Length: 123
Image 1: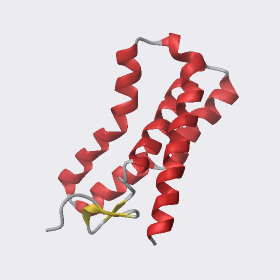
Image 2: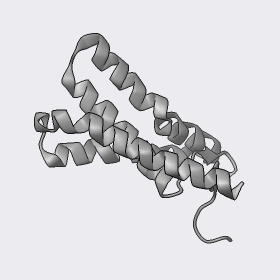
Image 3: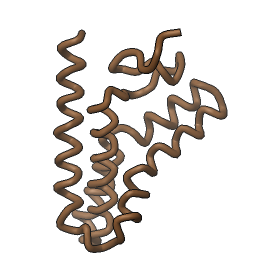
Image 4: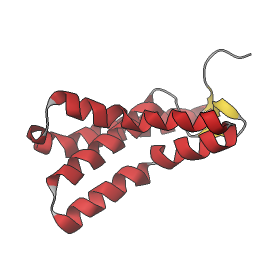
């Protein structure tokens, strides 16, 4: 299990770098603070925990899967709108960054229980 978690964290680092590589050629489309806001936007999904851990986990996981950023990239390839590549790249980078740090997809059992193991101090 520990080895698998290390690989998944490594994979998160690769996704962070890939997302930034997708973003970088289009970085001039917005100010740095706009990119920062898009990068941290998925963490607004924490608000779902106000409705309980089951809803919170669903909302959090819905926006922290790699596929969410990939949808924006697919739309970029369909429409050629570079802003979609910016959003998709930053979204992938955010999800990868979270995995790299050990913040995995959440379990309905509670915020601290993730697919990468327990986060924070044990209770």
